[in-house]
Length: 299
Image 1 (spheres, rainbow, N blue to C red):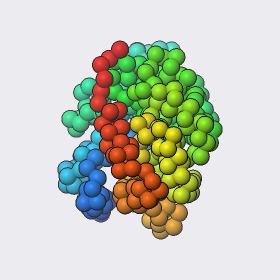
Image 2 (cartoon, one colour):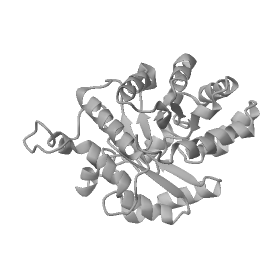
Image 3 (cartoon, rainbow, N blue to C red):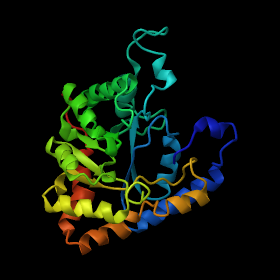
Image 4 (tube, rainbow, N blue to C red):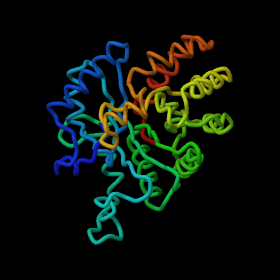
């Protein structure tokens, strides 16, 4: 779920535990019944992340939910972090790396749930000074813990290139990085460039037809598989059970395919029909996540 926690606390939003938790539970029980066993939840600070709530829902569904640490911002540092560290009135060590490491090694808040990966973002504004600081903190936390990095990008402005350059400058093994939202692009040269540099790419917005229609997204996957890249691609959605940015009627109108089941129910049959083998589908949906998610040795 995506929501503004301050808005919710002050009674401006429409989230109600007694309504939305059962609704999310039913939705994810249907997802489990459709054959999905694991969901990677990359919700980060800045998106209303509530791991205790996610854990409660997951336990009622039988799904394995993998959570992330991270900071979601397109330009400026959240004020809590901006007010701490070298050069600030509060002083002290740089706080973001320590935050990421704590959630990976010790758990999120008091939930006992440890984050498995680090989520960071770059959008159309590119790598601002604050985004630079967050990405470098993520790089250091990755190298200390071995937890992989996954990113939000704006594919239309080729922000994956910026991310790879920065991560490389920090000594990050690009094979431990998933460049996200690449499925919004039909530029095959750009996509193969990212994979040839070592990263996985996330073709992870199936159902988000406002950015790119499903037939085009599928065409890109089919062609990249034909070129031999199945081992570097991850297929998924950018779906939520709840988002406070869209009223239910608006969401149904603009994003009718927003479902955690869309890939298994619609995308996989379309790929098989267009000649992608079941083995390649399993590679993208099962073996690639299994390869990238486990922590590697620190380096």
